[in-house]
Amino acid sequence: MSQTAELVSERQCREALDAAIGAARGSGVAEVEVLIGAEREALTRFANNTIHQNVEAIEHHVSVRVITDQRTARATTSSFDQGAIARATTQAIALARASAPDPGLCPLLEPSEAGTPPAVNRFDEATAAATPHSRAEAVQRAIDAVRSAGQTAAGIYSNGESFEAILNSAGVAAFHRQTSAVFSITALAEDSSGWAKVSSTSSKDVDAEFLARQAADKARRSRHPREIPPGRYTVILSPAAVLDLAGQIFADFSATAIADDRSFLSGRMGEALFGENISITDDVTHPLQSGPAFDGEGAARSRLSLVERGVAKEVAYGRTAARREGRTATGHGFPQPSDAGEMPVNIVIAGGGTSIEDMIASTRRGIFVTRLWYIREVDPYEKIMTGMTRDGTFWVENGEMQYGIRNLRFNQSVVELLRNVDALSPAVRASGEESFDMVVPAMRANEFEFSEVTRY
Picture: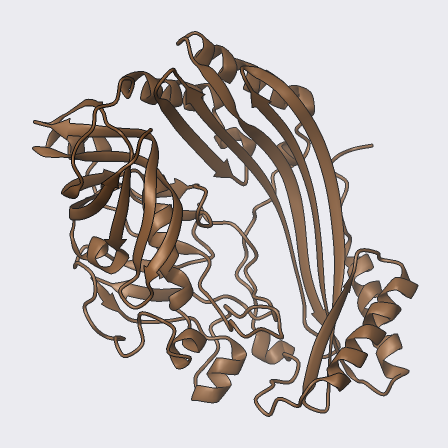
């Protein structure tokens, strides 16, 4: 069977909606919405320089939401069987009728309000058709590159495809099909390690051997790490490190979060919070972005200018928040019901013209950080985060990476970090472990606070 056969067809989606509408009408409910999702992921996992796992999974779900008497609820099934969809609809109706009325509840989205989602093409046939053999060949090249450096490789290579759709009884129908390829590798030496990762909608962007050599070089150059005292230092953050740290603030760019006074932007919109060299947009049409061009209710996503030259300008509005404040929804709402409201999810931080090599060359004393992990929030208003460096942390002096250093714990305000940036690389699609993928540059920033030395 061809792996590129459709996970779900538009016909199946419309039949699922019809089944839900039919079941709802029998209970006197007219407003029905279905969210449909499907994913096929194939994964090759390796450790100790050996492939030890190859798995493939396909998942489907149909989530039915109803609205009745200013009440709403949803129920989900993993089957496209009309009986299963009818049962989920009945469950959703029972849950809705058992809940309290919500006077702020929006009716179903109408097509005239939904708008037309911008065209995005994020499906690659070759990526969808990738085989275990093709992944194994790429992984073996990566393992050989690490082994030749006297190190041990571990990581994953996955490829797959996904499908998302939202349809409702008011006439909204939106569909999105996408592929993905992710490769991550850690090179382990006796007392050091290196790491590299890439994700894309196309496997042609994955050069496993090149990434393996990057990771091995980090492990080689950081061997016998030295200890430096905690304190404030100039840092050069790789795009992955920028992603995982800066990514902690974007749930706050939400009208609902601001209204609930749980956003660091509460009372600060229009202020120059960051440096003039920091501009951030939410742009679903950016060629390095991924995901559907519509939100959790089917509304077309619009481009947002979140930060312009350091000034907080715009935030995301879902329909409920927009209705409450007399604003226009921006197409960033979550599937309803949701207390979280909305969030920008196609983040693009504008880059600059300074390469990482040039940042290092122009740094008198500082620290290069490959990536961060175990990031947790300390202060929600100043967005002070704590976490640790790992897999390639280096002392930079007189324009050169001198040696590896022991990893450090940080306690750093992201707001302050983005105020202290003095150099930006060109922006790239970055992938980490603590936040969703974004388009971000590497950054050099001053006065980054490291609070403690770790013992590894």
